[in-house]
Image (cartoon, one colour):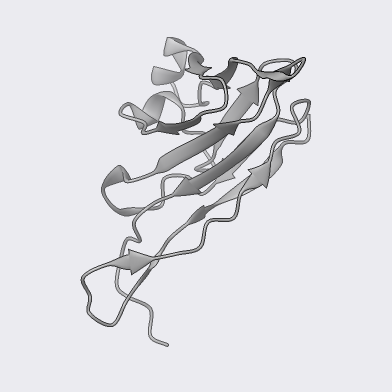
Amino acid sequence: MARDKVEVLLPAQDVTQSIEVGKITKKAVTQANGIYIEDALKNKNNSLQIYVENTTTSGTLSATSTLTIKAGNHYPNKMLGDLSVALGAGEITAIILDDISRFENKDGSINLDFASGFTGNVWAVAKRAGIKPVA
């Protein structure tokens, strides 16, 4: 399966150094492909937030669906397996990983699969780690 890539948005700090701002770019999900979030955990204090917008319909009505966060390929936590997350009809669901080692792959990515018939969008946001780049 060739997964579709989502890059983590790392907002930029404004001149006041009080906030960080960034523009969200939604990635439309192709259910058959699934998603991988590249460099998912290269951020400060494991601040990754994954957002899933469920636009699935049944007839003319919004419908619930399911997201599966795939187990990573690190032993022993990969033995905990995949985790299914309910997605409310017409809702945006925010996901914060508490046990990151359960889902992180050796290349730093995280894989997401979606229930048959799912339509919607995904994006990810995190706080930048490290020294502020020189412009």
